[in-house]
Image (cartoon, rainbow, N blue to C red; front, side, top):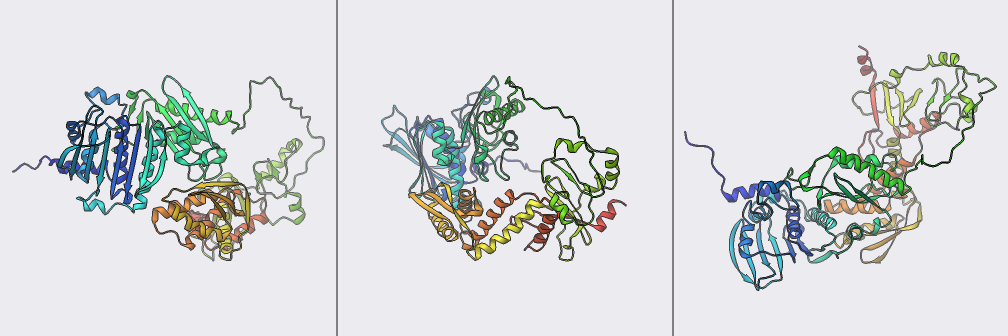
Length: 624
């Protein structure tokens, strides 16, 4: 039997490696930019064409390479970063494995020019599909220039999986930002199809953040600083009041970008209870650890890292952010070190008894218990005795002086806890026949859900999502009939668009101005939002960014109908978050009636479930 195992040819091995290192033009950008940083460059210029598929061209003023180094750099596992196995545990550079240039040159046509400081002439090298096609001396500036053209020209199967030029460019811009944010001491510029998009001079960290992500963060950033034996942490976190649905969130470790969901959770917990629904804070967090405590070699593109003492760093990070927010008066704080003493007057009890009857309602200020039964009389509603949500008024201290014996008799008439909180089975759509609500069996749970009876089962209704569906239908009608009310913003919101975004932004703005928006262009690509629909309070600039991002992703989604739909959805989400929970049976009945009369009582406009049902048959099965 002949041997089956054979060594792959170098060209095939490099193309397989390219599948990990360079699956898209943005990864080529990442590798070339990081090589320039490692070469000690103080100026880096990135040019891309056709979303990187035409070419990716990086020029720097770094150390440059000799002719021999230039040739060796394109060989697999060639690296200047490692001399022994011990060096692998003390990495302080970006690239180190020696795969990137070999992989890039195997799937593109590469032109290299490079010169060291002590050389009179530079060296030019041309490689195509991994094979050297020519070389010669040349006149060039100190540093290195690498242009990768016609990416995947020899791998048509992979070229078919490349996204649109707009989407690929967006990924390239993301990689550019990541390198720029961690190297403020390096001047960096980005050109798209010959147009200057970003020009970042050497600056401090905060100035670099504002230059990369926009002046919208000017009043948002709060500095953080920690120095300890395990690690040091510095950077900026955002104010809770400025949290958005599309925040800027970055982690860097030893001057390298990394994804770290575990540390993201630490920051999220620090903001717990401080954010508006469906928003997240901005943050730019930089970790410095001994190199031997960081393993960056666990991901093909080095986007993830494993750190020693991660759990302890997690605790440090969460406490640091929480204390920073507290110090900047974004969290209410009780100072236990103050000598001031708060005197609490003694309670002497109630002198008159409280009568309890079958219609009694006990309120604790946070949770309410009713007895069900018939709809309350108008007089009782006016007195607030049938409240289903928050108490209609704050209870006095004397209201807790209760005849517990009679209360026990009343409690026996209430449904048991297991009956109130039974688990609901698989979701099912509400039909018109089922949508008849038996209001006598209606009650609230955890200030979020209404539980009510249907003709053939029971339903658990998410109140906020129900309000979102109802509001969406109303806004769709208002937009269609141009009946949206508009108001001037107390503080005009600035919004910036890059040269790539500007043509799309102008198309979208033209549609929005017919719907109650007013924007003033202060300079090329710099706008101020002066007025907007009243129902879109605090969501204006976010809506514009969302529209433009989705338009760039799809290349198609700029129709008037699409903008109307997204505007209605955004206004519904914003207003549903501010709607109070129903405070009585009448409000609950009205809410359910409006929901079941809506265009889709089962799902929100974004496709989230509103109603979960349990049929009589499913209920019977649970009890055997």
